[in-house]
Length: 119
Image 1 (cartoon, one colour):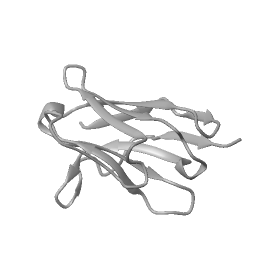
Image 2 (cartoon, one colour):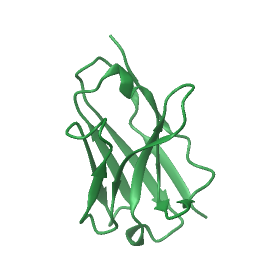
Image 3 (cartoon, helix red, strand yellow):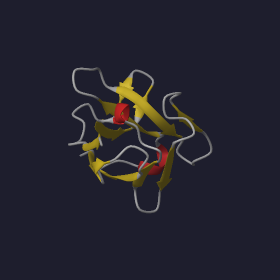
Image 4 (spheres, helix red, strand yellow):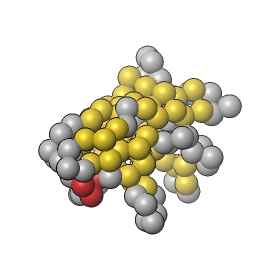
């Protein structure tokens, strides 16, 4: 049974940093590309960053490029998102999942991690 649990969210001021973690279980984590998504209030969920299964290729959305860094530890089934220079527009619930050609691996999604950037 696939399970994804995000953690590490919180309330920070603009310019500060946070590191999100995602614990994955129930599937062969090291066989899947993984990604971080976010959903702000009243908006659709959007892709933030992805990383291939062996960490060889990464993608960051233009809105976070140069500020957010995705990484993974396949030995621990963990996915991370280092978020630097946070802006108020980064406020959202952040989720991890495995992107597939026609959707995501875990349709039910995890609980997410709330990130609030406010002065």
